[in-house]
Image (cartoon, rainbow, N blue to C red; front, side, top):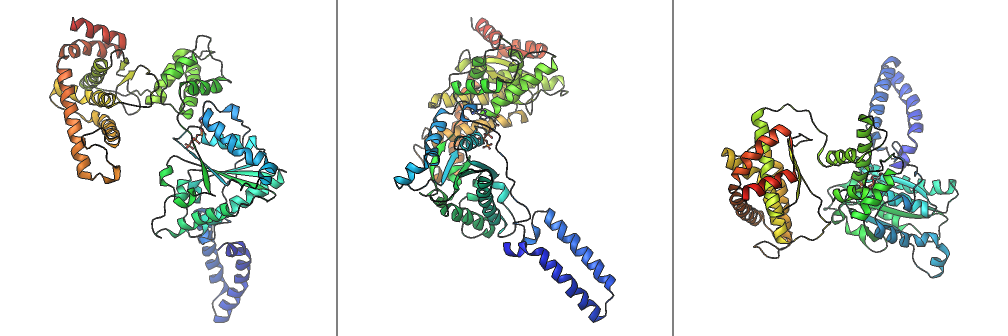
Length: 500
Ligand code: ATP
């Protein structure tokens, strides 16, 4: 396939005179041929721009080699464990002679797994800088093509070019980074996708071809958010046999990342990045970078020379819930949204006193209103009761609408999705009536039945809880409609007063 593509120009040059002589021989005027040639060229060019290149596209569309921006491990915040593990794994490139003397086989692949935006690409770039290697990056999706052999050709080109780049830059190693490797390395399901299989096979062949004694030693670093989808052939020893988990940063990590992205920005002396780190539980590195950037944009809009705490607070809201919208809403709609949000907030305050930071009627992104919760300590383990409370908080909006209006609205869709997500965690962690079950052994019917049982019971509990607060709804509604926001303190004070 590739050979044909290499000689496509020569083939075209050869065909032209032969076709011309043939047409004159059978008596057709050459003008017909010129028109035909014109149309063929147009079709050929069209196919090339579509990326297929008449199944000869391996050379037609090369995977772009991206130059590494200068970046070291010091520029990556948090992620101490992955950094340490990666540096250790890279020793074989740095201490090449010792590794050779001990007869250790070269490491060929390192797999980085974890949620999006946690710095996997940054780690690969820093690895190239640390080992003084040439760096090539590509994404799994760039190898997905309709035509058989095209993706495989691109893999071949990528490895070849990495070696060439290293030689050109006078380096003795090259690091190839493939993001979203699941795009090409997913499990094969029995010969349905020939193109896909060929691409993966080519990757395996290239990895097997990496020898310890080459002039340029190649190391493949791949990243994925879904390791469980990868084909077993990729994960066996001798291929991606070193796996490094890159998780969402903890509070110290978040503060470190915020500090890195604050380096080039005029931050007000009153700003506490430690507080920002506290309020951003669950944020990825990419989201934290976005908080700093959006904070700077808010400072620019306010014509402030420095970035203050309130700019960063607004930025956190924006990254968490989307941009503030100027949506026109009717009075009835606003009232319903207020009741809905109060429902979430009253349940939250009842099951976890002190947890509500703010109730707001400002439309943001898809939401018409929202409740912001106070930062909790980073926790990675949840008990059954905590998960049930989270479900009750999610159901609070719909139950509040029911109690006040006698029916629900479409505003609860997202809440229900959230609630069923938590139910899934409950069931899969063996905390439901089903006991310990393997997720694959769970039939659709079993799942629906258990899901309904859990949600019905918790809806009932939420209803009982909120029925005791009808007066709070009444009093808080006017305040919320008028002020648009209600602080956690205000809500707590009212609830306390009414309970007395
Ligand atoms: P994906 O899986 O979506 O490709 P990723 O894990 O490769 O994501 P990166 O591309 O490395 O994520 O990170 C995106 C951006 O987020 C970086 O350019 C950087 O600005 C910021 N970022 C992410 N993690 C960190 C970190 N640990 N330290 C500093 N910045 C970070």
